[in-house]
Amino acid sequence: MKCRRCGADPAIISLPSHNTGFCESCFRDFFSAQVDRGIRSQKLFTHDDKILVALSGGKDSLSLMLELSRQGYDVTGLHIDLAIPQSSSQARSVIEDFCKIHDLRLIVKETKEEGLEIPLVKKRLKRPVCSACGKIKRYFFNKIAMDEHFTVIATGHNLDDEVSRLFSNTLRWDADYLAGQGPCLIGENGFVRKVKPFWRLTEFETAAYAFLENINHHRAPCPYSGGASFTFYKTLLNRMEETMPGRKLAFYMEFLKTGRPAFSQFAKPAEETLHPCPACGYPTSADGLCGVCRIREAIQDRD
Ligand code: AMP
Ligand code: FES
Ligand code: ZN
Image (cartoon, rainbow, N blue to C red; front, side):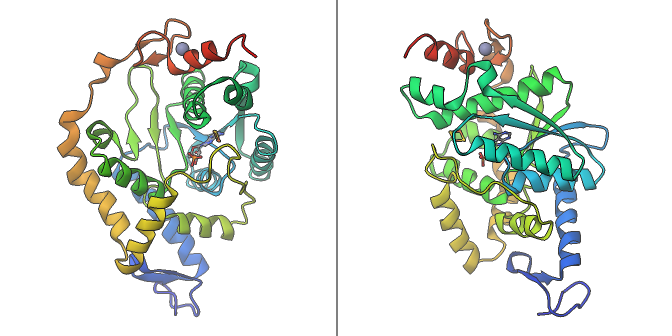
């Protein structure tokens, strides 16, 4: 197959979902154009924003940081060091090396210095640690963004992450989540805007970008979670995509255009549900303490 754009022979990548295939240079252009289109069409941010990019060490978030910096955005990386043995130190050093090589700013937040290292949380909490870990990460994304005056938090979620989440929300007809899901969660009432600039790009496309850019990333899954989230749905949706190329992106785009507005009546208004946590002052919808202060309380003074 020849590159559909410049005619170079052979193309290095075939993209059936876009009914096309590209040489290396045209794939890079395609990738940048998809990111740009995703940012502009959903008004995620502009070149005036101060963007905090959440870096896990995986291929998606590192590729996101590199691509946004190349597009001239004001980006700073944020890594939450979870202190998980044999995993966190590797992820952190991959990120530190990456930021050094590309001369990018990085903030590292250690959960251990807050008494919230994940192995301790896992040992002392009586429920699965993944949801507590997610809460702790989101809490520090927002707290650091607020404290350091960032205007946007960007994560590396891609189209497969978004479509599998949408599929799961739809199977449960979770009206509140269906009213709120999307590549841009508006910032208000003590929350900084959260965006997913890779929402138009599949896992395959971000992996190809990371490979071509020679990005050394942290590959091992978290030892506490049984692998990637929504794995079953992702497999299912990829089988659908093989037979019906382009359905994943079309399903998601049509949701943004038609589905989400139809569910907007079910969204809980933020002012009704949020109040400042009496211990840390950050907004929460829980009665009394916020989720993270509850975790702090639950893991205190017990062995
Ligand atoms: P995951 O839920 O692990 O697939 O991660 C989704 C996104 O959350 C990643 O692409 C990152 O942007 C962000 N993220 C996950 N873990 C961390 C972490 N430890 N520190 C900073 N950002 C993270
Ligand atoms: Fe949080 Fe595994 S429990 S990354
Ligand atoms: Zn709190």
